[in-house]
Length: 281
Ligand code: URA
Image (tube, rainbow, N blue to C red; front, side, top):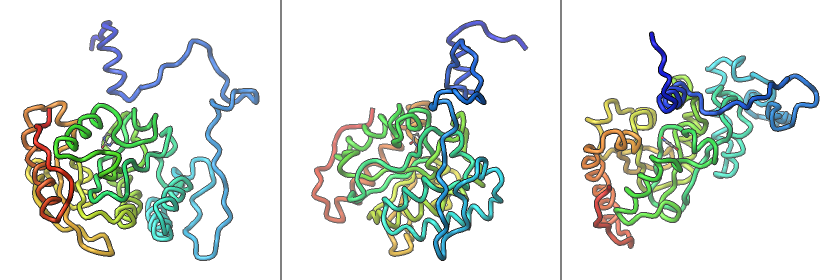
């Protein structure tokens, strides 16, 4: 196998392999006591267990690696159920040590937009930009999502609530494993329940599968379904992921159909938002 010497190809290859951070020239002894605080592993606070609290998955380094996935799922369910508000849910996620993705992620990516919005959008997982900034859909695909929403008269900050199936970035943007999805599912389900939108839009295959049980996003997109939040039944639809649309721009016509269906559903239910007319570019 011959390795390329073209710097651009090398950088693209590194990115593909999940290497998104450059190292500096100096070598560091990460075990030395005087290593700068920023290089040390993030301290994880130990919280005393409360009566009736979930199994404690909150303190040990590498706790996720040492935790059986079933325990992590049970703990996630209990913690999610105990959260009475979105703020409490965010805090519960920040304490949760049952998902190994947390150890490699820079930030917890919880949500953006407004939980007052009638539409909740759930993507797959944060990418590099989202991980760095701590907000969902802020990179290139997020910018396309913003344009898709704007085309039907929706503003990302004031009209919709945006989250992801997983709140931590999988290294190298790999697809989350079924186990990671199962562990994090109770949190996003509770987030939907607490945000209580009228309409749920699942963006991309993993979100459509995890929340709506749909396989084959190209065949299942654009169809209205019911989603049971646990409190009430709301309308839900899967649509194509903007990252896919950036790679396959011709498929934007399908996404545009879905966006128009979303607009029509909002209008039919008495929205006062103006209908959009521009196409998604
Ligand atoms: N892709 C996603 O599914 N979510 C994000 O937040 C960013 C990219």
